[in-house]
Length: 106
Image (tube, rainbow, N blue to C red):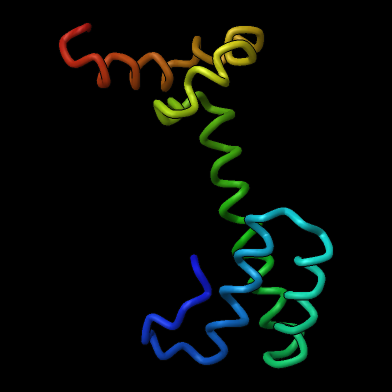
């Protein structure tokens, strides 16, 4: 997301992109400003829908983490300590993912 126009021809696309970038950035003031701009141009329902989509993506990641779906390799090292402390790697899904990733380690 770079705020550029990719020619998708989506009405008010820059406002939605700005909102998404603010959410990903985590700055509460930026989120509030982007939400107000989106709501002002597209209406409260559109702003609510955009927030719901952002929340859904967050929820999907949390569910995947909670049931033990293996994290990306880039995150394995920095999450090892709490995965071990919480015994997240004992879940069947996590064990299956490791077997698949190891190809032939069944």
